[in-house]
Structure formats: structure tokens, C-alpha cells
Length: 252
Ligand SMILES: C[S@@+](CC[C@H](N)C(=O)[O-])C[C@H]1O[C@@H](n2cnc3c(N)ncnc32)[C@H](O)[C@@H]1O
Image (cartoon, rainbow, N blue to C red; front, side, top):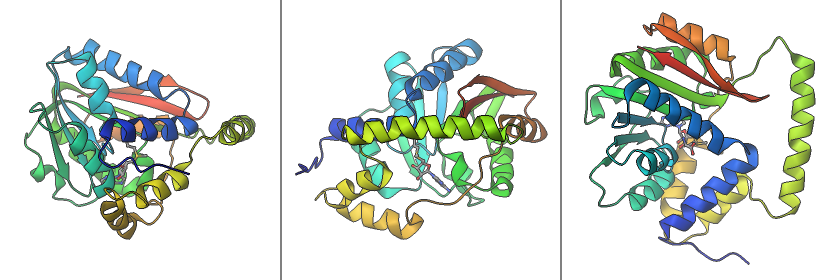
């Protein structure tokens, strides 16, 4: 039997984190390195755009580590934004914007015209390469000179199919083990949200928008770096990687 979490935003955050960690056991490490790079390049009081913010996972870690930071979260999912807005209610360092990142007009909806850092995690693989190229052009226009963009996501090196296959087998064996021990996967987590009196409405709307989730591409870290340079960033490269994922940093 599951108990409804209602408006216990802390419990929703915990539950979201556990579900995401089922896929990415090194999720916290990538957030830590992302924030290390923010501090190294733009300092400890950044104005941040949390791109495709979901429940505001990056914003929460940002403010925990840098209390003088400010953050704008942008996303399209009404259920995840409900959790994000509930979590940060009354915190004037944080604002949320509902927008579709494939809509050409989304940057105009933001409260600021430029940011020290644009940060994103586990999200841009929902987009195909062509809309992502357009998005990278828009992001380049939002990052101030000397500012940074960081993207942590699934990034597949297609030159190493046997290594990728072996990694996948091992990862899935670990996930199966964690599942037997009670971990929730994506579909089960959304069933919990759909059955909750507070989240049922926004969850129904998010399924109308996305279905299960959008289909996109998972190009290599090299592709991301090259595309970011073409979009106007001065330098771009991988700053962290696991067998399946990478964190790409681009400097404006
Ligand atoms: C797996 S979640 C990751 C959320 C958060 N960054 C995290 O690490 O927990 C992917 C997010 O990307 C958002 N997203 C995907 N495509 C989008 C689009 N076209 N416009 C706005 N948000 C989008 C989804 O709504 C979802 O919140």
C-alpha cells in the first residue's frame, strides 16, 4: 500500500531523487562537479537558469551550496513544476517559468535577459539534434560573456558499441537488483503522482503534453561540444564522464 504524499514537498523531492538515482547512481557526483565548475568560472553568487528544471533539483543544490545565488527554473511539466513551486514557495531568490524549450519565444518569458550560468541535467535527450542546435543558439544568447553552460546527460559514444553494450548489461543487472529491493522506476513514480490528490490534476495534464516522455537523441559529448562552439561558445568540452553519461561545459 502507498500513502499519498499530498503537499509534503520534501517527501516528493526525496521520492523523485530516489527514482532518478535508480537510473543514475552517480547523480549527486555530477551535480557536485557541475557546481564546482560554476564556482571556478563565475564565482559563488551566480545568477542561474535551471533549464528543464523538473522539481528544481539543480536549484536546491545550488542554493544549499551558494546561499547568495539566484535561480530561474524553466520547464513545461505542470506536475514537476507544482513540486518545484511548493518546495521554494516564499524564497525570493527563485522564480519558475512554464515554457516549451522548442518554442522559439521561450527566452522572452524569463525574468532576466542574461545569466552567469545555464545549467541542465538529464533533460536535453528529450530533444532531437535539430531543435537542440536551435536551443543551443538561444542559450548562447542568454549566457553573459565569461559565463557558462553545463549539460549533464546521457551521451553515447557510437564509436564503442561493445563497450556500450557491456556497460548496459551491467547497469541493468544493478537496476534489476535495486528494483527487487523496492526502487521505483519512471512509470511507477508517475503512477504514484497520478493517484495523489494534490498531483493528480497536473499529472493528467503532463501526460496530455508528453505521453510517457518525449522522444529525442543522445549524441556524443563531442557532438555537444562542437555544436556549442558553433553556437557561439568560445570553449567547450567534457569535464566529467561515466560509462554512459557525461557533463559538458561550454564557456562563453
Ligand atoms: C528527467 S527530468 C530532469 C529534471 C531535473 N533536471 C533533474 O535532474 O531532476 C527531464 C525534464 O525535462 C523537461 N523537458 C523536456 N522537454 C522539455 C521541453 N521541450 N520544454 C521544457 N521542458 C522540457 C521535462 O518536463 C522534465 O522536467
